[in-house]
Image (cartoon, rainbow, N blue to C red; front, side, top):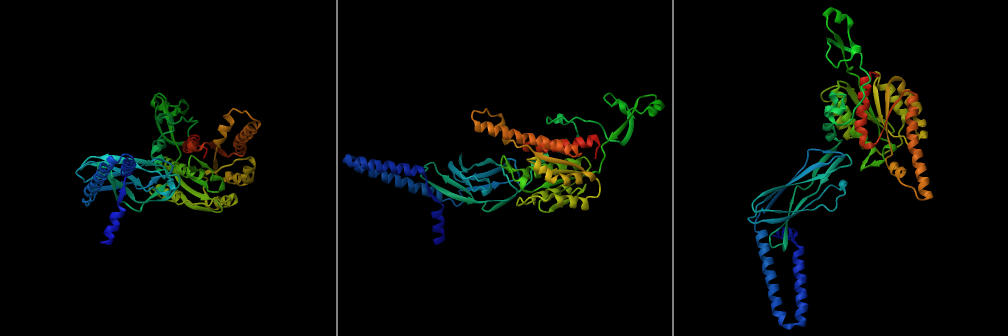
Length: 448
């Protein structure tokens, strides 16, 4: 009996409308002090309020299951993307109700004012949707789904609680994975409205001899076959397959910088997931590893059907305290564990030439045995400083410093190029597309 009483008290809430009416009654009592003839009429208003309050209690709390609600979440969330959520409501009352929904969002979203107010007709169902954008991987724990139901009298609300302690994991951006899926089948990215990549040549892996059709490269004409068949014949080539491609993710201090809510590390992780899918679709072998103080989270380059799931789970479990990265350990590990010449795409960040020069001997050592592509980031915050009109000496000084840092990024590209190291200097939001473009360019040029 005591538990039922406590449950009743916890589910009962007085609405603002009740307090507005109460304030109005207090005002009437003040007026009745000035005009005594109003005194009895005011008590009639108080009696009416008590009657309607008892009626509101009766119609809301007599139904055992007046309202049902369910939070419908994705199986897993996609990091850095808008993820859809739905709340399914079912009204069992035989009158229309007003509902206020307060969902206890995981603390990672820092949403402190979540509230949805809707009206649901008698004995009907309704589905309400909202979106959330996670900015870090891991487990997201939802609290209770609270639904406050009010009758047309709107004096009180009855609280219903559902779906308490629901957990949804957040994985690297699999939504981007679907978005760029078709790119794996063609180098002509302009067909998908994304970006045109210049096809420089073709690899020399012979496939077949076929009849010439308009549009074929005249340089591939096979003159012997043409003479035998008395019609133009051309050699057809295909991209070399089963080449190993590793994504090396620097999870050190330089990757902690945030952009649009995500760290550079998470941008690199999302890009690695999408690029792995493209690599496997191009019949190459995809692998990855992450490094900071030591090399870990390793997935050896393979082309199995389960490789994408293995890569996804490994990327999900990458954790870091953002220590200073040890490139000597990276060099030794690659020398020891990757024996076949491979394409190594290194996600890292260099802000100055001094930062590059400290690691350059190890990068040169890796580039002797493998084709190395260094992917690093433009500091987009500097653009606003550079493009801003200066009015004070301090602003002129800030602009000069910003231009110096931007210039150093271009110097880093040229310095890497001197030693045969490819580079991709990109903005975080364009990282995935630029990494795919670079991989397809290397494939089309046949330089691996």
